[in-house]
Image 1 (cartoon, one colour):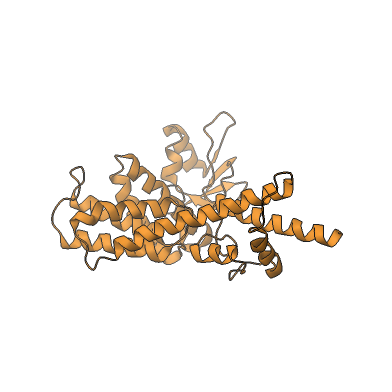
Image 2 (cartoon, one colour; image 1 turned 90 degrees about the vertical axis):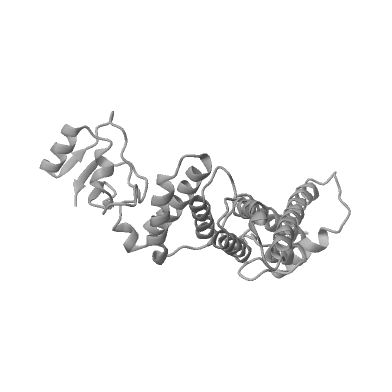
Length: 292
């Protein structure tokens, strides 16, 4: 009986863990955030990169076909988590079906722009990861903007539409590397100058998150201010000791007199009642700022 109990608890743990990972949009392969991976799991096969026991996954799939027992707390919890996974898969497949239908046209025109743009926005905001579909949609949108001189929306110019396509294509990339820093920084600056509506402010936040990811992972990123991504990081935050912010960004939070003193003394003490200055690299509040 102990062995049976351990097995059923393992089944419940596996199913509820995968539900939690999807809800929290964790990264694959541990998180089943593609239709192929989630479909395989629900059919009783362990997807590549997932460390679940194959017999546990097979048992979960088999138990899903059994009659529900509302008197069993275990069966109710299992059924709820399994239903979430199956409904999530159906939702993802429905979205990818609409995307495939839209991309099935041999050639898209300006009339298709609104639909393709809407599908790309929906895919990027969804919890499913499909870089192939996102890239295909972005490429199709780029083709439309490059082939037509018409305005697709009265509130946007052609240049702004092209910027939208480039931003969405850049954000569709699942992983960013040091090689992407310069291009993302260029997009960040372009969006910042055009951040007059909520959509562009959201793009700016998303690009900033990608730049921050590179900043924390690469030496090239750490040479650049992690707050504005425009100037060289010239100040060291203490006690974390990261050289991660520029004089210009710190100066915005100080009085002109404090800036003069900092340049003269080569350091600045952050008083308890001052506006906090956080290290962009680790988000720790700085007690001192020193010139590097």
